[in-house]
Length: 126
Image (cartoon, rainbow, N blue to C red; front, side, top):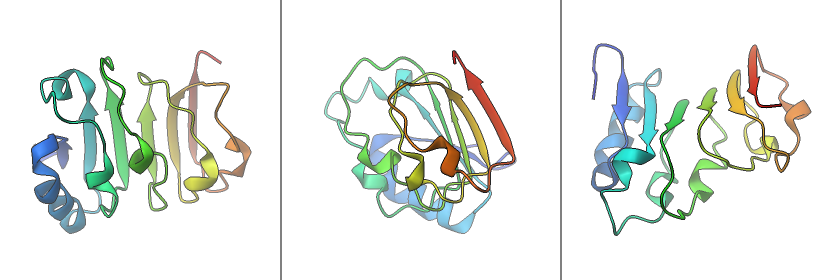
């Protein structure tokens, strides 16, 4: 955790602490580094984040495991998404408040035109 920059690294066995921190710090960034997570062999789902208020999310690293990403694909309050590493098929109707999107294009993503609040859009590999 970097309290000065308000960035918190996702650690699977710290979901409750992460949720509390993000609730208290609305401008904090949640960073998920898949290279770090692979050390947690039993971890397979981000469902522990279902009730977490995530306003800014950054995804990095190489995925070496098939995770359940459902909690990351429907974040109504999310304002900033930076995913240039992980191949996820987003339905952008699930992100009505998104203002900043940095994304490696995936043909399976839907409704990017529905992003009415978008201020910054960066697409890679379009």
